[in-house]
Length: 71
Image (cartoon, rainbow, N blue to C red):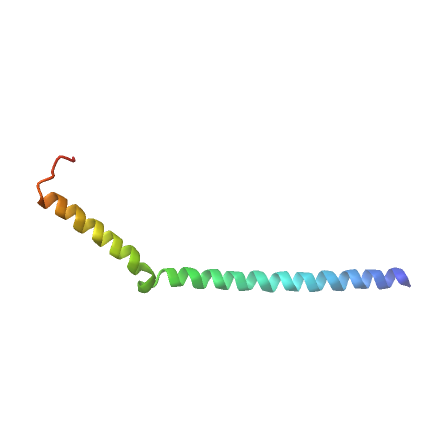
């Protein structure tokens, strides 16, 4: 009788752990997807776009100053 109780307890613990890990993984996937979508938003890309435009302006200024020594 005690062997049956121990087996039932082990099975219940395994099921509870399995469900807990499964739901946590599903939530992590959703959170990861949301972070990726947010990274594609115009607001998230603005600092990078501003850096590129700034670098292009500096490069254009250098060329306008006659610094054509670089190939």
